[in-house]
Length: 77
Image 1 (cartoon, rainbow, N blue to C red):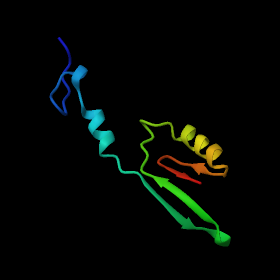
Image 2 (image 1 turned 90 degrees about the vertical axis):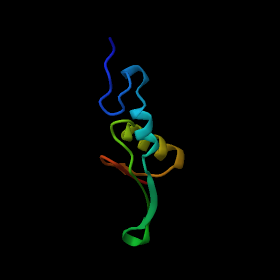
Image 3 (image 1 turned 60 degrees about the horizontal axis):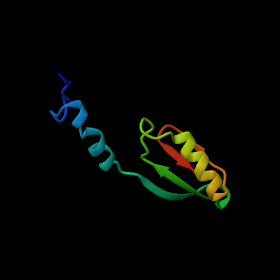
Image 4 (image 1 turned 180 degrees about the horizontal axis):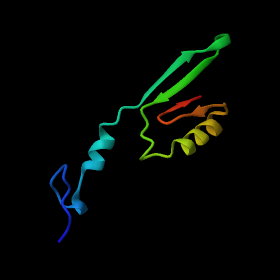
């Protein structure tokens, strides 16, 4: 017999909780003016559990030809 999800009540094979959680995810992208008048783009709201933030920051930095850093749930470019 299959296990039943405690959140949605469906069998684990048909569980839709992960899909619903990703649809409700809110990612914010904005710019900040930093020291010496430099503009910094900040990306917040990325779930570190579902996406490799370090790898995403690496790809963004190489594609956008800029420097940057990452923390638990935000990327600064």
